[in-house]
Length: 572
Image 1 (cartoon, rainbow, N blue to C red):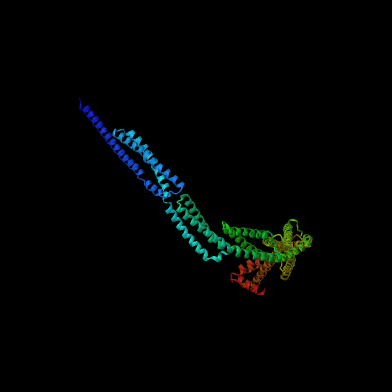
Image 2: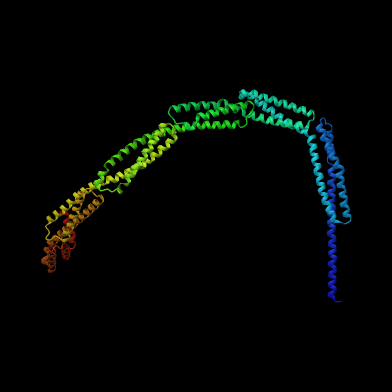
């Protein structure tokens, strides 16, 4: 046999032995765990019968003086007897069965039986605990109920003291509340009676009634003074004040029908009477909430009255200024409208040019109609001032916008007449300017007048004639007139500048030639230059003449042009 085979066999044996040992250890550990669980279950079984149910039943047995309590006692005693005998024995048998399974190493069956045992113990324990609680409820009821009633009595005494100390706050309701305190006092005596009789069920009922009665009287003692104050003083005085204010405002023609004051006040008085009747039987449920709601409504009425008064003041002031303004604007629009045909005939206006004015007329007509509607609503005394105020303010704002548009339109129409007047004035100025140009040309007696002057003068005269023609037309087209005037003015100024420049150039040239004659003997060049300048002067080329004369004299006397220009300016 080879060494390899020996090694394999040895390894296989070792693995087998290890597996067996590991299996035995795991099994043993599981077995021990089950043993411990069984011990715990056995302990829980023993705790079940150790519950002090019998001692509690013994306490209860002393006070069995009514049939209901006796029946409960017998029932609970029988239930516990069943637990102690039958169900306890069943648990014991199951524990023995699990123990035998463990001794026989039958772990699977032991686990199954132990699971059933746990469930059964849980059921028995639950039944036992519930039984104990039921018995305890009776045996501890006297102590517990007395503790509750003691607290209730202390609370009751505090409420009674508070009630007596504030006796005047309750007024007519005092006697009704006092009667309820007496009823509570009787109920405390009923508690003592049922406690003496050990009537468990009735004791619970009496304690519950006492708690409810004291909780109720607590609310009554706390809220009744406020309710009485609201019912007897605050709300009646508010209603009285509102009625007086309402009647005065009606006399002053305030439209207040929308507030339904009379109906709502009647409903409030009806509701307060119901609350007053309920209060006599100490039923104050929702009473405070209702009364506060009434009070809020009454306060809101005062706010509405104040709002209406403010609105009327604003309405009256706005209406006064609106009326003055709309009369003024109506008059202006009517006056312009009556002259519109004449304006159209004078200034050749088209329907498109009058669109803005026609829109203003339509808007103003609508504003007038709406204003008349507001006045009718005011006279009908149906619509409140708070709404009338908003209407008149809205109309006033519309009228302001219309007034601005009308001002712009009137400025546009007025500017046409201004343009006509300006055109006539400028025609006179242009005619005078052309006359001055002609006079100036005649005064200086230039040897030759340039063609530029003749052409420009002719164009200016023609433009001037066009202005005259436009002014004679019926109707006048303002746009065309303005163009004609601007053209004529520009051409006249052009002639004026040409004349001044021509005369200035010719005069300076003549002055320099005359001044330079003194230098002719000094040089042939100077003599020749002055001859050329003189020749250009008499040909009407005044600019070329001036330039040649300046150039010639500058050879002997620099800055001659500046000197002659100063002399010319002085003479001018």
